[in-house]
Image (cartoon, rainbow, N blue to C red; front, top):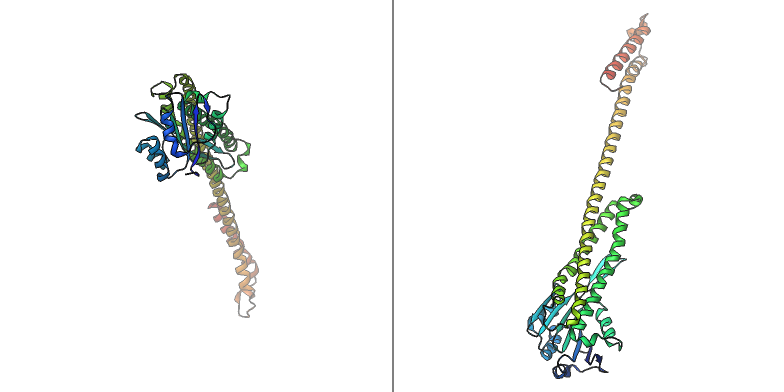
Length: 349
């Protein structure tokens, strides 16, 4: 349990009591804190079902929510179980050099006098909230458990906006590769693969952001009992930022879809031009081969006749004919002219 529990502290009068509380005393301490004037915050890191069961028993956490907190991979949501509010939030970090959206998960149990957070994955959001709330100049602890929830949601949504800014840069770069002067320096398959991969990451991003709007709206509208009234306006601000982030994600997704279609159309047009060019080359080669074959056929006539009369046989009547030489030349000339005109008429020459 020491490895699972990140911290366990008591906050009273807007300040943290020095030191840590033992898990065995955490539940009893939370029950003895005067209503609204203090709370216990225990943070768990990727606990197993057996490990979280100890905490669930100490704080009376609902079984269904505990099961969701252990399994993780939940949609962002807000559920109310009697006096306990269960919230799931998904922090996001954009790994720029890999163009990957790293999504983690935080489950938050809010009671009247306690906060139990369960983190899955690597995220520094809860550590930053803990550092802020432990700061003597901060008034977050004075707002009770909902102060922890507000600041957690606020930092998570700030992370959404940072990720969107980084994605903006990559989308602009992709547009330049597809439509700009640099498009010939990048392989077509590489462009398409990069666009598709980024669209897939944005879809994962959207699943973390879009469902969070409704829980934040319920918190901003005061529809959840136990939320500090002073924090309603802050929840409204976070809700507004989530809506803007969701809109930006949709814009990026549609833009990448358009860019992908344009890239595929460009690749198809390029392949079509290549095919046309290859056909033109093939046609030209066929024309050249026909010309070569035609001239070879014409040249074959005098070669064949000259070969026959060059065999030097004694018994060849034409050798003793007075006009044999002129007759042979005439036959060769007539044959060649006939073949030339025939090939010319058929378009071979």
